Structures are given as C-alpha cells and as structure tokens.
Length: 212
Image (tube, rainbow, N blue to C red):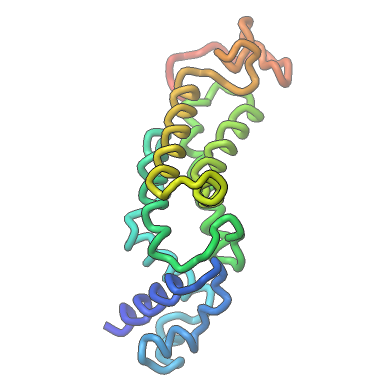
C-alpha cells in the first residue's frame, strides 16, 4: 500500500536524524526513501504539516505510546516505553532536543496536557499554583532531557536512568495521592487546617468525597 510505504519511509528518516529537527523531513526526502514521486506523496498529504503529523502518529503506533486519557498511575509505564525507544533514534544528545516545527511543538503540548490531565482529579481541591507545580515537576521528570542528564552527567546506563526517573515519578505520584502538596507548610494537605487556600486566602468548599 503506497500510503503505508510513505509513512514507513518517513519513520525511517526520523530514526536516522542526528538531531530532533524535522526540517529535513521534506516531501522530496520521503518520496525518495519510499521510491515514489513527490506528486504521489502530495496525493496522500496535502501539506508538509499533514505529512509530519501522520508520521508522528506512526511513531506513536510503533512505540505503543499514547497520551490520551493517561492517569497518574500510567505516567511511569509511559515513561518506560518512551525511554526504551530512544536508542532506536540516531539523535546524539536529547538534552538539546528542543521541538522545532508545528508537529513537534504540538506533540510537546500534548505531553504537557497529558500530565495536567493526570493530576487534575487527585489535586481537585488544591490551589491552581500547587496543581501546576505538581504537573510541571512530573513533566520535568519524564522528559528526555532529564534522561539525558542522568546518562551524561551521572554515567547511568539507560536502564538505570529509567529506573531512577520512574522511581521519582512514583514517589511524587504517591505524595500527590496522599494530598502532600508543594504549598502546604506541614507537607500534608495543600489547604490549611481551616479549609482556607494559603495562596488566595479564599475559603475552600467542603469536600463531598468525589472528584471535582
């Protein structure tokens, strides 16, 4: 199937890039790798953005990674799958892998939204600042830049780096579930003992036992 050949060719090219920069993933490059003409690629993908988005979905299918509906408990397993795929790419250093282009930037946004969604329910009673702190720290932990830092600066191998990061994610997830928020003075409930938000000073509504 021609469309499948095009996507497979795109996936091969991405795995060969030495930097996480898809500007070389052009219609011409994909067509040459797939053994088809550029017009054939245009027949299936009207724009380069459509082509890149389809290849990104293909990479997700190959790795088994999806950010849809991820829960707090699911962050560790997704992180393991993500880091397990890194050796299959020729990228030299992941700590300089800033997203370039609309497809990579959109994928980065999906990752951040996935983390925010994962903490939304267990932090439903927290101040907004506390929720963003927790989500932001989880986002830092499961980033490829953190993985690269452990490998390069601390001489951990890939398996050790993955174990360290998933351990930290698990510890933070446990703290979040227990209500140990970053804004609380006692390390317990992110709301003060009288139910007052320590940031805004507003009174929190009484808990009903369900998630907001």
